[in-house]
Length: 356
Length: 274
Image 1 (cartoon, rainbow over the protein chains, first blue to last red):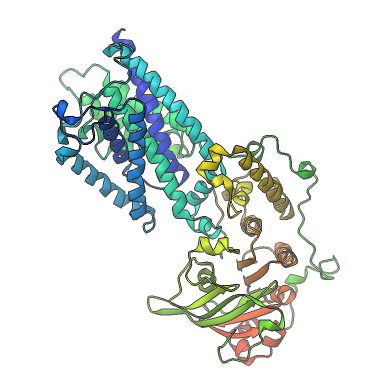
Image 2 (cartoon, rainbow over the protein chains, first blue to last red):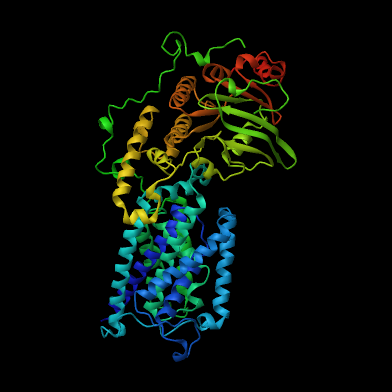
């Protein structure tokens, strides 16, 4: 396979992977209004746990890490997703009941930094700053895949996983649960006054979104074969925010578009460009600036994103539903007021002055 | 039962009490918003909560609905002690409320605003979404049918697919009330439902409130429009300086010098009734 196609399939993999990551952040922020600034931390937990679930016992690898279960794909990937959800459960229990959006965001940024420091410095956990490497490539030996042939193969695997997760996410966001999450996003006080236990729904959103983060992280570590703290600097969270803002907050299709524009075209495509002579690494810095400019342009001119959140029209809620009488015969009139004034004699009685 | 030391009519004269509060106090940074409010709301009647601005009416509605915790005192919904219970738990027991300034769920359509309202929905469970799709569809169909009927009644049917944030002020008032009705509450607290709406709409909203009573609901409404209070309310609670000043029919209260001095006098001297 030529280098060109190698790069193309690498970009395709990142497209699908960030589509998954964006869907996870979208249900938390776009659908429920949880400003999860620690999102990359959940991605990292998923990556590490997928890695250690799939790697052999640490004693044989020369690295230091927990577990080493030697489990096959996709069981290790599911463990990665569930681990991220388990962390989300703990975080939600501590933070979501007490904190409002802005304070919650600050606490989550702190959490992200703490997770980063722990993984970077506590070597027995995930091999410290060196991170995990020699992570098994799924099906590589069974299918006798070379390094070159593994890339398109695993891009396809990521595509299948993304398709499955997109199906599940669509079912959730189109359901009454998705509607309630959006109600909580719009006004949690009103949602609570309507009998919705806001914490329970926010917790559900955190668990589902973090599972997606974990799976996305799990695919990352298996694609690259390694993962260390430089791969998930806390600022990476904002790249995923850029994906969902550019794509269209609250729209799953927008997540795919956002992943294409931000992750594939703006981040990874320039990485394959030849370096500017005399200025190695300059493209990377320009790249970061371009993302910032694109984000500002979007927020200024099209805050709803390229593919805005769609209006769920009544005919789409239940395609075969027609209101009783076909809708047109339902005359919008208020109930009669049992007074003679309301019967039409004289002026509207509620505005007449009365002696008190 | 009320026990403020004032001469007050009892709701027993009408029917049994369904919502009651006793000696409710609430202060904000040392300022007493409520100072021992005590009253009973009669079942299946329309009760007005009136009083001067700053009397603590909205604070009281917030406490009754669980949106705010009281410093002391008790509240009961029926025979259940709901003191300082979380608002969603009180709502699930059948108490709905509206807000002084309409609070629509702006990103949702008008129809979706109503579809959120049913308190417990099978479709809000992950398990049911994936494993019981037929149950979801059946439930959704029933809810859409009911929501459609309510929207038609409230004159919002044609706006069903508009985002709620696009509605006018009066339409938002109607949406908020109809959303509460969709939840089929036992007790409905309305915080100034007529505020800022045109006279014709006041007329309609008053009709809707009477209709709620016909459907068996109990309504407690904060209202400054005494013509409305006189026409549709069976019972009136006067709140002043955080305390229950008097309760009874409006005609009785007009003869009460304290009520006239604290509230009704203001209205008369101001030359307005709304």
